[in-house]
Length: 156
Image (cartoon, rainbow, N blue to C red; front, side, top):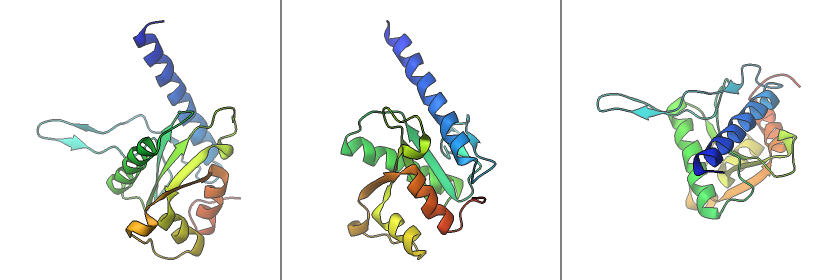
């Protein structure tokens, strides 16, 4: 197997995981779909990347199909999600990590900042301070529950 074969296989897995995530989120965000547009920049123009999933107002999603991620990789991916949230005018940006052996997206890891978790759980304003900037992970189903409690999405 060549490096390009491995790259194609990885991209295929990532695309499939994005489709699975969008399908899962459609229960609460009927417009959720995989975003095929990515950010780009040319000399005179640019288009910011707004995340892997669109159709979830106020939220940006960055998906990684990785069995294990180092703290540094998590920080970079979370930073990307937060940048995408700003670019798309979203309130929150989340990193979703597909867990090995877990086909149900509700069981995948969702990463967010401690301050964001506190804001969602207490329905208070977001807090930006170094002490609440640490990443935490929850299962995606639990994050969706928090988001629903905070009036994001619709349905059950």
